[in-house]
Amino acid sequence: MAERKPLHFVDPLGDSIYVFMDAREQLSSIIVTPEARQQISETGVVVATGPDVEKVGVGDRIIISYYTGAHLQLPECYSDSKYHRIVREHEILARIKAQEE
Image (cartoon, rainbow, N blue to C red):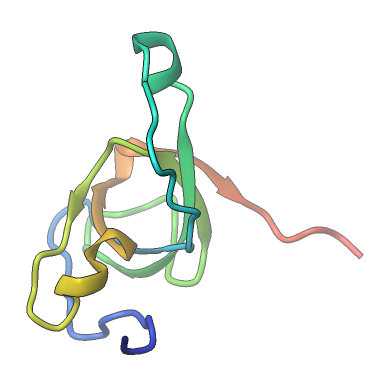
């Protein structure tokens, strides 16, 4: 399997954001209740933003809901499309700030 890496030719439009998601463990099976569905989140790094994005920038680490955004289905990332996501700015739950030293 090829090494996971962001696709630098993706150019989001409007308030869309291309996020390279962190690796996550695969669960063999899971039952999701409506309450639990709202609580699952993931983290990733912003790789590119559209021109209308105001609150996050390239390189920011963000938290989004597990069920938000669109997975990229391009030949270059088809085998690991779960790591490539396009989200709208309003779908971002939080930005993770660097810890102060």
